[in-house]
Length: 192
Ligand code: GLN
Image 1: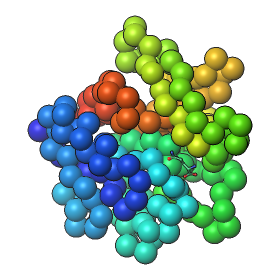
Image 2 (image 1 turned 90 degrees about the vertical axis):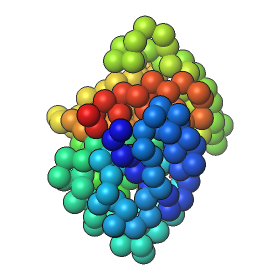
Image 3 (image 1 turned 180 degrees about the vertical axis):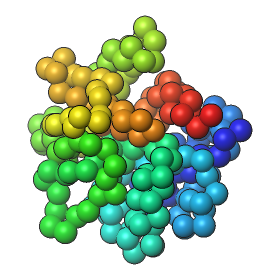
């Protein structure tokens, strides 16, 4: 089985580890550069991107992760993880950095306080005919797609909430909390 790391500095990494293990993957928490070097792919969980950014720099993980992305490692970011993968982040706090790699512009907390969290069904042809139930929690939105990235899913109003660019995947929502494992399965196909 391919080994998949889940960045375990902050956020809901345990939920991702459980989903990946349920799919038969050798899933491991990654907190140190040596652990990153031993995995074939990486999931960056949901949580709080400002904190994940600070911790990844403090733990010496930011540069190794950027290098792994540049080297073509499959990486999947959910919510805060999508923010960490975006080349450009709007409404970031002063000094906040991302790993980058995904040729997109995302806006943090894009749904505002009135629609802090919500759930909806998304049509994602790559995942088959059944709609995917998607949970959004203080979610970012993809406001601009660069030439290298393409949309996998949009809300009814057309706003992009899932993107793919080669080995990189990002979702505004949290497939690790719904029991529908198709997004993780889709990511694992990139590791084989
Ligand atoms: N609002 C968070 C951030 O800016 C993301 C929320 C989440 O991951 N559920 O990082």
